[in-house]
Length: 175
Image (cartoon, rainbow, N blue to C red; front, side, top):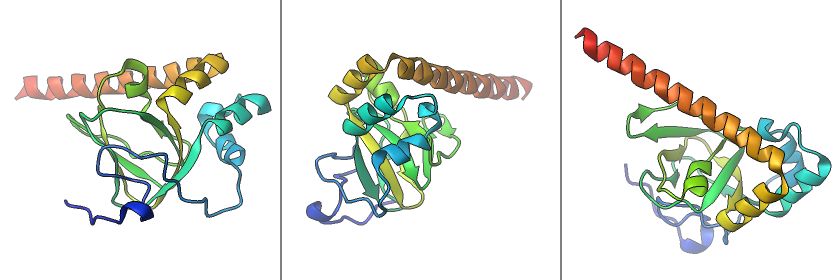
């Protein structure tokens, strides 16, 4: 499906590969980034100082429904937290669970330097907190508890993928 092209100066996105964090829409509400972060389960145990550090290195970006936020195989330069809206997840093995406010994506490419492993598409208008690569590493250095929480989420994702692969293998062996 081809998405309609928007003028460069009216959209924070430039093609299907990545959000450009230099172009940022203003947030629609008066909520501060810290208010948004408090709603993200990943940050539920963070201190106010840690939340301030996270807010200081992130930008708010708004995208319309239908916009591709990341594409499989493209370089990953940003980590995303969903503030408002919903996105679909498609990997090379199929569709995953939709992501909602409080969920995040894009961390794997920042951690291992490999291309994106999923295509993430906004299924509604979406507001995101975005952290770029250099700030992501600084954030992890400054908030070690966040590293542990990210690793726990990654571990759960890997386990779900393993379960899905095992179920698929089991079904194929039965035929």
